[in-house]
Image (cartoon, rainbow, N blue to C red; front, side, top):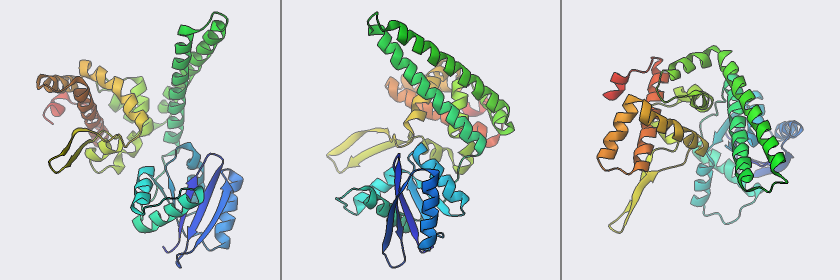
Length: 322
């Protein structure tokens, strides 16, 4: 493939840079709307770019629609971690940052690194993820309102209380919708059955796992890759004799997933015999509480991976010896 299309996504617009064989660019900005997507297709056809390898950063909801549009148009699409683009920019010692320059940078990254094709989530999982993320947003808003209520003047308390009640009602309705959605799809239903058997995994964690990584678990060659994807892999920083920083997790994965796994891990430390024994062993060895909890979180991910990858129910004896 000799042409590369870098796309820099923003909320309302996106910049496209077509890198051609002669190392020259064609650049243009488009509205981030279905009409803008069609304008991009016409522009690419005009400049013989419909066979280009497309690359854009994983920017959440802002780029999803465009990525699906280009994929449906038969183009090869790669959606990459923004950290990779940032590191590539540092390697070029770039000093200027604009949307136009970023699009060109992404095109050069695509040519140099040839990232893997993007594999979108199945429609049922995409819908489940949207429902799950909406619940998390509403819970965050509800907590903010509860915090305000604690210090609010009497004149505004009724409005805050009404808003909290509305949010709680919406959360309950969405959680019920999540359960019905999982029940309506056989693959999600079967995986839920496997996950339910793991002590410490409740309804909220079930939705998290099914929405965010259960359906793509086959893409990970081993559990270490999944742990790295979640940003739970330990990292060391050592150089010579003078630099030796304490080890820490990478935190390069989705922060929301780590946050949502924290409370289930605490529950598993009490109710899951495998996690409980593992956690107590670390504490007895003198590990700080937060270090032991993070290690227990990785252990829980190992168990989830093993159960879903093998398709067999949770066996405490098997994981005790793992």
